[in-house]
Image (cartoon, rainbow, N blue to C red; front, side):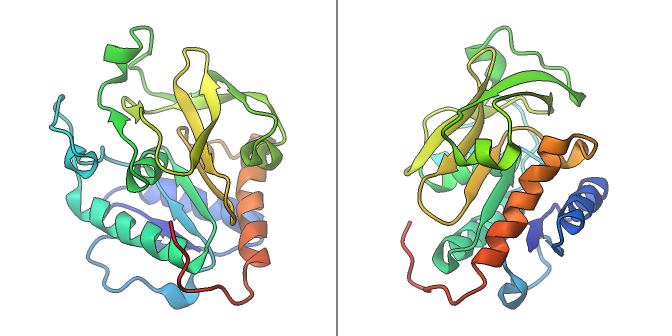
Length: 228
């Protein structure tokens, strides 16, 4: 499966993602800006990794906060999502990836969560300390096997207006969106936390296992004219 990453940095996150996918029986290929053509022949699923904030112009807004942007990566992941949708490939969006999935489908972001949720902690928490609740009727719940769990928190932005066809499937105790998914097949979910950084937690391993299963189930011929 294809895993998006920044041109520089992000090596540890990619290696951990690779480890989680391999443990579930899958293989990964890193895709970065300026790497050339997207290797769709090897693609069975797409993982959009974490990283810099998304350019607000992507969701028709002006910048409200000072942030590091990566327009080249925005363009790469836009193309990855477009290709995945048209090829009916499973998708997992991680942190920034969940936000980009929402923006790609026409949604918007809160550029500063503290302005909307004053109690939102700006501290980066690598360990699973934030409590979230997962909708028991969701695909995300079926993948994780849990409705209540603790996750890490490395984000200062978050999902605001939902994109077309998305539904919220997880929130934290403040009401901040922590998970979204498409109801249409195949599996397409976005999580606001970093499951790859929590390899010791069974529910996070199950999330990658669900993606690998979805990729295997979809290895039969897919239509090339799928619509969003």
